Image (cartoon, rainbow, N blue to C red; front, side):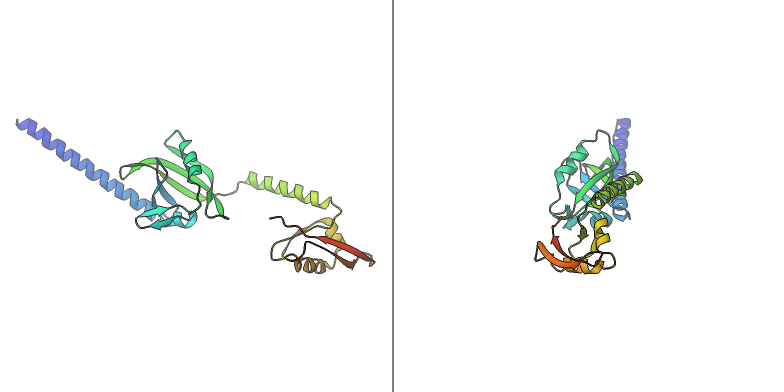
Length: 223
C-alpha cells in the first residue's frame, strides 16, 4: 500500500512539474516572439487566424490589434496564405516569397519562413517575415527587359516622352532627343500642362534645322 501511494504521489508531482515546465516554456516562447526585433507572427494552423504578432510584424504587414486579438489588413486574401501553408508537408519551410496585400492599391513582396509548434493548446505556425530582397539574377533579368524596351522605343521614328502624373520626365526615345535637342523643356512643359485636359493637339514649332513644322501631340495614359 505504501509503495502504491508513493507511486501515485510521484505521478502527481511529475505531472505538476511537467505542467509547470510547459507553462513556463509557453510564456518564454510568447515573450521571445513579442520582444523580437524581427517581424514574427503566430497563426492557427487550422484556419490561419492570427494568435500573436509582435510590433515589427504589425508595422511591416499592416496587422491590427483588436482587444486581445489581431486582424489582417482589410482586403488581405487569407485563402492564398492558407493555400501556401497547406502545401508544406514538413514541419517547417524557408524563404517562400509571398505577395502580402496591405490595401486595395498596395501590396509588398515578403519572404516567409515558418515552423509548426504548439501554443496555448493550438497547433500553430510560427512565421518570420522580412521584405523580399531582389536577387542579382532577377536584377539582371529586369535590366535586360528594360534594355529591350529601350531599344524598342529608340527604333521608332515617333517622338516619345514618358512622364509621371506630376509631369516629371521619366524617359525619352532617340527621336525625341534629336528633335528637341537643346530645347527639351519646351516640349516637356507644353506636354505636361495639357495632360489632364486634352488627349491630342497640334502645334507649330521648328525642326532641328529651324524650319517651321506642324507637330501633332498625342497623349496616352499607361495606367
